Length: 297
Ligand code: ATP
Image (cartoon, rainbow, N blue to C red; front, side):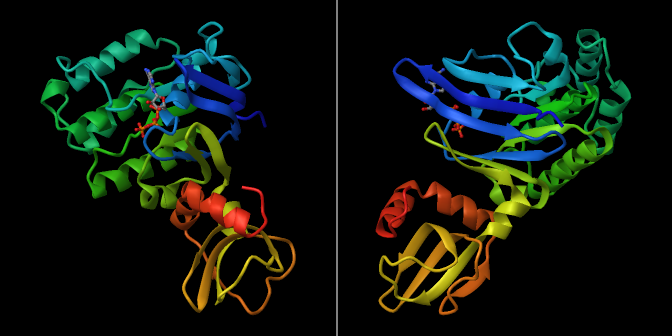
């Protein structure tokens, strides 16, 4: 199946600073993909390139095989909720839903948006500017879902939500994907929330892709190894040491497993998504560890 998003050697520069450089990745259709990385990593830039708000300075981005800046045809397939969920503050939710219908004549599910807001107890007749930040985020999501998009791009959608609302929000997304085969790409810093609901991961750091792949595969191929204090010798069954830490007597390694069994003097532990992401994000540590273990970073 054609990927929902395909990015090849993508670069975007602001003045002399590259916000994204030589990025290649795919978001397969039907996934809920998490886009994670520290502040300034390039997440918003990538989402803006995917929705055609920015023009690449190098490489290309395709959404369902089409250039989002070449005509508007693919834009009808994309729902986008920008950071800080901007909605017209003087308009009520009901008015925003009506306006959405006028702007998206091809397919607009007003009932879906209304039902969703009613379920959440969000008053339809209150100006959006008088709702709480979390309620406004829910209105923005309801509007994006009413478009029935094939690809939903969400920039930090859950940051302003309380823990219960975050869980509800992610469940709605999973429901939307299951029902309508919507692909979701959402940026977030809240790793614990993503682990439950996202099945694809993209880690960005300082303009580069550090890691990408299906979550189950990443969890399966990475392990924490604990063993006697080690030097720089290779460990049997390990393809790459991502991060190493040592005490006087013991070493702890987060590794990508190779094909064979791991040297039995190491105890293997399963990892969480957070373990994996943080290990790859610890960029300086990654380089030190990799060079110490004779592995290119
Ligand atoms: P955050 O998690 O803080 O939202 P981000 O990962 O979304 O960060 P971007 O907003 O994509 O990061 O920014 C990537 C880089 O590009 C940063 O170094 C940022 O300072 C720079 N940048 C972003 N927008 C502009 C702009 N309009 N003009 C100049 N530099 C920009």
